[in-house]
Image (cartoon, rainbow, N blue to C red; front, side, top):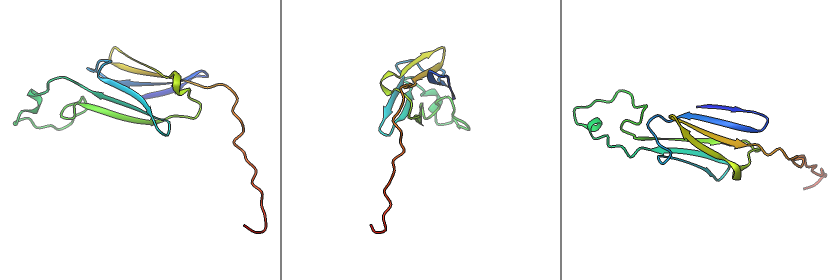
Length: 114
């Protein structure tokens, strides 16, 4: 996974070889968490034969999918996120909210008793 940003947006790129856009689901869940899931509809019955011994499964293998969760920065415009799968790469564009934010500093009155 690659994650970089410009002054206008954050960009996330994930290699998803063998997955189509229909196989990949991108959503934002509570707490500003970007969730990316992929499930392949391919038949892997030959790969699941009884005499097959798996040593590493990075291309789906027995799991036949993947899931990734990413906590988003506060400056992302959630309603304008876009995603695309092209040539085995998922690109997620997270536009930044460039409007000035109100200060998060809040003064608390200090007293001698609670």
